[in-house]
Amino acid sequence: MDKNATSFIIVNGKGAGNDALRAAVSKLRDEGHSIAVRVTWERGDAGRYVNEALAQDAQTVIAGGGDGTINEIATALALASVEKRPALGILPLGTANDFAASAGIPQEIDPALRLAITGRACPVDLARVNDNAWFINMATGGFGPRITSETPEKLKAALGSISYFIHGMLRLDTLKPDRCDIRGENFHWQGEALAIGIGNGRQAGGGQALCPQALIDDGLLQLRIFTGEELLPALFNTLTRPDENPNAIDSKSAWFEITSPHDIIFNLDGEPLSGRKFRIDVEPGALSCRLPPGCPLLSVR
Image (tube, rainbow, N blue to C red; front, top):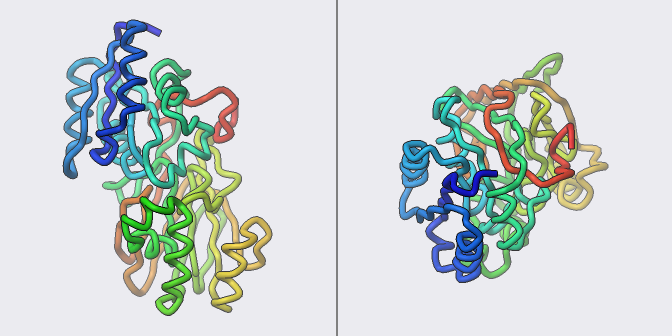
C-alpha cells in the first residue's frame, strides 16, 4: 500500500477524547502513513467529510464509531462516483459494533486501525431501501428496533449490548407483533411477525445472530422472520435459542418487499425508517471494504 495515500478517519463525536485512538494514529503517522482525522458533531457531518476525502483523492475512509456511523459513511460512499470511491475501513468505537464483530474485525484500536488502513480491500454488497436509504449490515423490524431506539444512552454506556436485553424485558407490556406481507424471489409469507431480520451481515441488537448464514459478497440477503402467533413462547425462543427456533422462517433473495396495513419501523444499522411499504434490493459489489483474512462474511476468504 502507498503510505503517501491519505486515509481519512471520521470519528463519531462521542469517541473524540479516546487517548488510545490518538496514540494509534500517532504511531501509524510515525511509520509514514498519511492520516487525516475528522470528528462529527451533528447529522450530515459524515457526508461532508466523505466529500472532503473525495476531493483529496483519499484511498480509504475509516468509520470510527458504531453501526450507525458505518451506515452513514457507507451511504455517502455509495453515492460517490465509482471512479473516485475510496475503500471503507472500520474502527469499532460504538456500543454494540455488530458489523465489526461479525466480520472478525479486532475490537482493540491498534490492530483495527492498522487493518483499516493497510488491509486487503474486498468488494462487498450494500442494500438499498426504497431507493433513498441504505444499509451494509442489517435491517431489523418488529420488537427489536423499538427496544433499540428506546434504550437510554446511559444504560448503553454502563452495560453495553446487554442493555438492550434488559430494557426489552422491562418493556414486555408494549410487545405486540406486526402484521406483514413479505415477498422475495420464490418466497411469499404473510402473518404476525414478532421480529424481522434482513441481513447482508449476520448480527444486530448487540450480538443477536439473526441471519447467521448471511454473506456480504454473494448478491443475496438472508431473511429471518420470528413469527408471533404465541407471543411469549415466541419471544423466549427468539432470545434463548435463535438457531433452533420453531417460530423462525428463513429465506434468501436479491430483493424483498414488505407491506403492512399499519406503520412499522425498520432499523437500518441503527437508523430508524418508518412506513407501510419497504422495497429492499442488493447492490452487488457496491463498495470495497478492508476486511481481515478469513473474514467469515466473505464467500471467498
